[in-house]
Length: 536
Image (cartoon, rainbow, N blue to C red; front, side, top):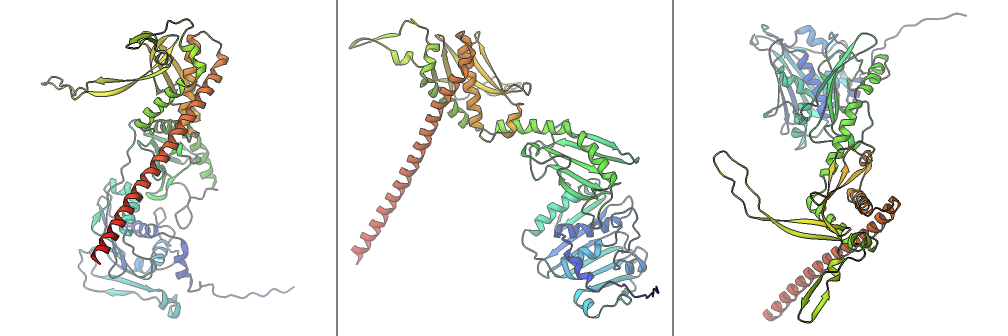
């Protein structure tokens, strides 16, 4: 068998350049790519200034810096696809400048010069011109002579835009860049201005003492460092880990090592993954690599305590979400339902209790209805005092009225309330009766795991409080505990009826208000018509 050999050129088709624009870069990612190039060219021990201009009038984007700039050879190579001398820097793949510019516009110009050089170099790429007349071996570079030797840096001007410079784009871009370059801005390595405003490092509101630094040693000897913390205010948008590689933000708010759930929106942190391999577009880590797999398995174990703390915060936030007015209304309805539950009366008023009597003009009668009220609400006037100061005495403010609720058990009246408290996770609630202070308290466990899945907090509270009330009644009357659930269910049935009636009443009131408005509107129209008839 005879085998022939032929050689031929594999110079890429010229369309590869415009195809770079299909890389999926957002405006923020493309501009960030150009800023990354500027960071690579910064001077040591000197703050780099980067200015980004989104010009909506001339429809162009400009990114300029006062970095080292490029000499002629480096400028020439900057336009070559995949060429890079940056071995351990951000732009090691040699695609960033071209991909970023092509995703933003059809034309881009690179202008660069170095300190102590009297030459400035200009390279201009025009997508249409390149497709029609471009030549891989004859790309043009312009050299400007007699340039101020103190001048240095690089400017990239992008024109014939492929994107729309909508009004809010500048604001959105500022937010994205602040997030991406916070480490550089915070350490004063880089100062970035977008149009007229300098960016500020993004500051997270963390709960004190929750920030923990960590260090994970990998099997191959590499080390991954970072920190975890708990946000003071949970946020789906802000939670998760920012993953950095050599100072570049690769992934923002990554829900790494856990499946996202609203109960975990308090978790936040940064991970510095300098040793991890990334894809050519530097937007993804190669998660199948042995090094990444090793890291991921160890990180999952590391964040387990953080997940527990986040879920605790979530439960506490859920608890505080019930408005005070709604809580007060629920308390009132629970007592109203208690009064309608006849099964409780034998436990509230002992057999043979002497009925209360009072006299009036018609004679003597029993105040039976008052005696039968198991739950009561009273208004108390309480003076509120100002905070104590060094030179002033406390001056009472205007007195305020508060509602105090009571429950009668075995002929004795106790003040009643409920609140939240931390217990072991297997306890849903604790019911207590303080005979010294005549008070019943039902504590709902804020650490109970079921709270992670509760959607209707009013229903959840109602069930536990009703059960707590039943427990106290049964205990004080020395009855069998098997009566607790039936009593609770009767109480809840009456509570449901009361809440339903309230909702129906609200609907009727809304209907009447709408009807009244329509009536007034009709009167106004009739009046206008009558006035028009009189004029005619």
